Image (cartoon, rainbow, N blue to C red):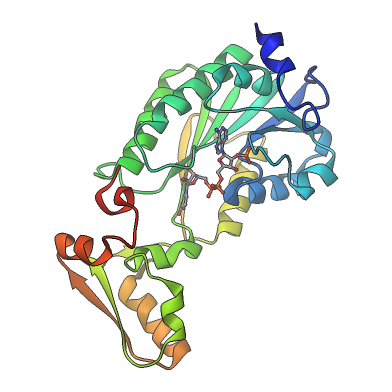
Length: 275
Ligand SMILES: NC(=O)c1ccc[n+]([C@@H]2O[C@H](COP(=O)([O-])OP(=O)(O)OC[C@H]3O[C@@H](n4cnc5c(N)ncnc54)[C@H](OP(=O)(O)O)[C@@H]3O)[C@@H](O)[C@H]2O)c1
């Protein structure tokens, strides 16, 4: 059965069905965070110690190809691919599935089960650095995954990744950058209220996670949080934009329902109302 499924894969991306012993298997290696972790890990350990569990239908990135690391096929929505992709490995990095929906928990659980079946020793999971009492579905899926991983019996490290610097427009009311091209005063409606975020650069999160992954010990059965060293409010972010543009920019804090009305038709329903 497994052989039949493997036979049906596009073999150009996956030249060998016999997976060798490696120390690290990385998922998500062509993505925003995973590509940075991959790049950093390559500076620290030999390429022969790394394999990539690749989903990307376009195939490996140029960087992965050039590195010569082993490329295996792994699709969270097809758990049978994961056991082979994760096998003969000591450490596995599970990058969370890119979705804000609670239903991604099932994909994460299947990946953890596959790691167990494949005989992986230590699973590293990229979670999110919100509070434990968050009401957001995006965080609940992480908390449920964390709980499942802790109960799995596998050695684990949970890396709660801070908020990307690069996504600041999202938090400014899903701010459209084209608005910056205009002139005159700019008012940005945001729902409910302002708050502080310890933003972190994607490069720094990638580098920090890779170092945790490569550390010979010290992170077993621990949850670590990676964030920036200083929290900044949206008001402060807006003041910076204002200074750069030499244009008056201000926040307008509005009730949730008013914000939803303002953005209806501009943003997907799931973004506005939650999954
Ligand atoms: N901390 C923050 O501020 C922040 C912001 C945005 C998103 N996130 C979350 O952080 C996590 C990492 O995302 P990212 O920023 O690196 O996003 P990304 O660039 O969208 O990449 C996520 C990875 O998901 C993998 N993927 C997609 N579908 C898959 C499938 N069916 N099976 C296996 N893998 C699949 C891809 O792996 P391949 O490379 O193998 O194709 C891709 O590289 C996601 O959960 C994302 O939602 C965090």
